[in-house]
Every structure is written in structure tokens, then in C-alpha cells.
Image 1 (spheres, rainbow, N blue to C red):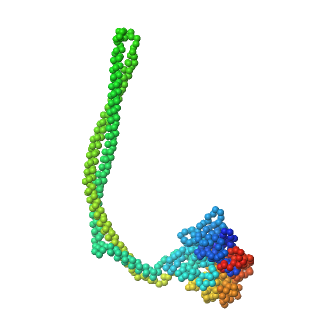
Image 2 (tube, one colour):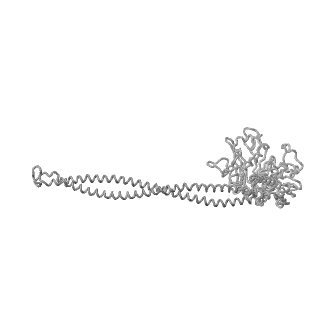
Length: 633
């Protein structure tokens, strides 16, 4: 069996104020007591916490409370708490049942606005939990669709005091004609599990005719504008096409000429670059050689100077050595009788050294001369090559000067033809666009076919309506409602008839009971068919028939059908039945009248006394006031 969501608590908190809290149990929960104590406020607060956009009533008692905390048990058994600021806005989800933000935890942020394409909103979060995510419903007879949001299910969870006595159908909850199709299909999704994703969207014939007329007028305007571009004396499309073919042939021919001219210039430019690079490299090498030869000439001069100096030393030494072997010119003593040699040995050694150095330098000078001859020959060759390259460069420049005007003429001719071809292409595009628009116009300018019997089927079908009627009948029978054996679902009014009488034709109290039975039956039907349902039903004053007219003046005296109901003991059976089906869902009943004693003893029952010093006075703790007067009932 499908499971739903279960409420655990609803708490208001604020700085320096006592927490205002309501606790819930599985099955039946009852809140009753005096008017103007906050019972209906609890329903509005719960609706607000399940994504309602209507702000909370701005009552005096909640001024100091700035946050709401709603504890839930999800269908998978997980305990979570939904947080929302009292001023509205986005939500946060925390793990566990809380009434304050746990330390160090940010919570999961959920946006208030439904968005079927994103998971980060409360609607998608809750729909996913109960197994209804991704559903779509047709919102009109043309099959236009909208995604099912959790707020679409709210009327089957929250039934206010005004709604429960309304003559309006429980299915058509908004009362807006434009929403009737969508609301019927929302009820269908609940009772069948089938959405409208397979429905094919069509357009309303009247809207289609108006759209068709507007499109034809717009196309006519475009065609007229295009014909204005062509002009009155525009040639036929065939002539323009021939002109285009001739231009394309001429362009191909001129393209070949232009390309050949361009290729010549490209080749000359490439050759000029190569020759210029060679001139630059040759000049650099020649300069390098000339600098080297200049340095070698200086080195050769140094070698010559050194040789001349050494030869002078060698010659002087030779002369000294020749004199050293003779008799002394002063005393006439022979050489072998002379005591003083006057450095003859040193002179001999210097003479030998100078001769050796001369031979060494002479060899080096010879090598240098050979190198100079080689470098000079290379330099001469480079000079000749450089002269030839410079001559070639001049020749290439002259050829470029002659070729550029021819290339320019070919380019101009090609560009002129290209421009003319673009103009003709544009003209042909106008003809083509005219033809396309005229074809589109011919497709639009056809009578609309109208087929009978093609209306979109909306809402529940006959067998489902019959089965649902049986479920309502079983609920009313369990409550001891008169004529409960004769219940029918009216597809035209989307409401039930009991004993051949429309629900709306009964008094306020009976309408309230029948509306309550409708919503309880919806939950039971979904559970019996194993279909998704939120699993929570909150009914505000379903037993209005048991009111005291002198106390609840706004509802007036009891009508005959209400008096008849009072005599059946329905109130006690009502509570007994809801307690017996506590395994199917959670029920929260808000009442003014005291529930039967058996209910007050065996169920989760809370009473708001309306008196500051007697029990719980109201939803919010009293603030030094004997009686809370300003809380909306």
C-alpha cells in the first residue's frame, strides 16, 4: 500500500518568546474549543508550511514569532523538519524533528516556486516523496498542459471553514471557469494515477482562424515589401538566372587570369626575398673577411718588423764573434793569451737565438701569407656574387613593377564581376523569398476543417466515478448519514448527489458533512487502489450541523436537514470511523463543539479554552491578557 506524509509537530519560535507548539500523532487528531482562539490559524499555518503563498494572518499574538518549524515523517520513514520564515520565502529541510537550527548545519535550501525541471523546490521535493513527480495535466480543451505541482493537491489536504460549507464543487476548488479543465484532470490523476502526458495539443478553431488571418496579412505585407525591392521593371526570374550563369562563367575565367597574375607576383616576391637574403648574407660574410684580412695585414707587418730586428741582432752578433778570435788591437796579445773574453760566449748564444727566432717567425709569416691568399680569393668571389645578386635584385624589382599593374587590373575586373554577381544573387534571393512566402500563404489560406466529436475527455471516466461514488457511500454509511445507500457522482457538476439531492442544495451543515465525506473518500479510494495521496487531511468544522445557533450566530438557525442529521448520532460515528482508518492516513479535525467523550479519552485531543488561566488558552501563549480576542478562528 502506498504511504503518505505524516505530521509530527508545528512550532512557532522567536527571540525571547515561549515556543507555540502543536503535536500530532498517527491517525486521528482533534483540536476544539472556543472561537477566536487560533484553530483555523493552525490550518492556515500548516497550509503555509506546505508551500502556500498566502501570507499568514497578521495577528497581534504572532508579532514576536519569526520562524515556523514543521516536523514530518516521510513515506520512507525518514524524520525531517521543514523551516520557513514567518514572513514567507524559501524553505529549508533539516534531518530530524527540530524546533531550532542545529549547530553547524545549513540545511537543504528549497525554493517556494514550483519548477518541474528542477529538484530544488519544495513542490518537487514533496511530489517525489509521495511518488507523483513528473505528472502533467491538460489545462484546457485544446490539450495545453501544465506540470502537476504539490499546491494542486492542497485542496485535498486542507479544507477551510469557508470551503467546507461552500456550494462549490470539492473538485472545482478555485471557482474560476478558466481552471475547471485543469482541476477536473487533477482529480483524475488522484483517482486513476494517469496524467495527460499523452494528450496532443490542438489550437482552438477561433484562435486558429484569427492567427491564420493575422499570418496571411503579415505574409502579404512581406511579399509587397519584397516586390517593392525588385521594382516595377524587374526582369523575369529566368532572365536573372541566365544572367547569374553568365556571370559565374565570366568569374571563373577572370579568376584563372587573376590567379595567374597573382601567382607571377607571388613567385617574384618569393624570388626577391631569396635574392635579398643572399645579398644580405654575402655582404655580411664579405665584411667579415675584409675585417679579417685587415687584421692579418697588420699581423704580417708585425712579423716583418720582428724579422728585421732579429736579423739586425744576428748580424751584430756575427761581427762581434768575428772580432773575438783575433789578437788584441791594444796590446797585440794573441787570442789564446787574452785573459778577458768580453762576453764572447753570451754573444754567441744571442746570435744563435736570434737566428732561430728568425726562422720560426718566417715560417709563421709564410702560413699567414697562404691564409691571406685564400681569404682574398674567397672575398673576391663574394664580391662577384654580390654584384650578380644586386643586379638580379634590380631585375626582379623591374619585373615586379611591370607585373603589378596587370595584377591590379585583373583584380579590379574580378571584384567588379563578384559585386555584380552578389547583386544578382540578392535579386534571386528576393524572388526565392517571394516564392517561399507565397507557398506559405497558399498553405494557410485554406478553410479550417471542423470535425465533430473530437472534444478532449477531461476528468474521471464513468467507471471511476461509479467506484468513487461507492467509496463515498461507504463513508457516509459508516457515519450513519441518511440515504447513504444512494450516492452518485455528477460529472456535470463534479460533485456528489445523495438520495437524488445535490450536495449544494443542502443546508450549510449538511454541505460540510458531505464535503468532508468527499475528501475522506478520496484518501480511502487512493489507498485502496494503491495510488499516491499526500496522506494528510485537515477539516475545519466538518460537524457544523452540531453548532449552537445562539453561540455561532454567523451561520444562522439550523435548517430541517441539519436538524435531521443531529438526530442520527452522526458526530460520534464520524470520529469512530476516522479513528478506525488511521492506518490509511492522518486526520486533523478542527471543531467548535465538544467531541464525544470516547474521542476525548482515546485520541490525541487538544482544547483551546479561550481563557488565560484555564488550560491552554489558544495557539499562542497568552501575553498577560485574560482572554485572547484577536486570533482568527
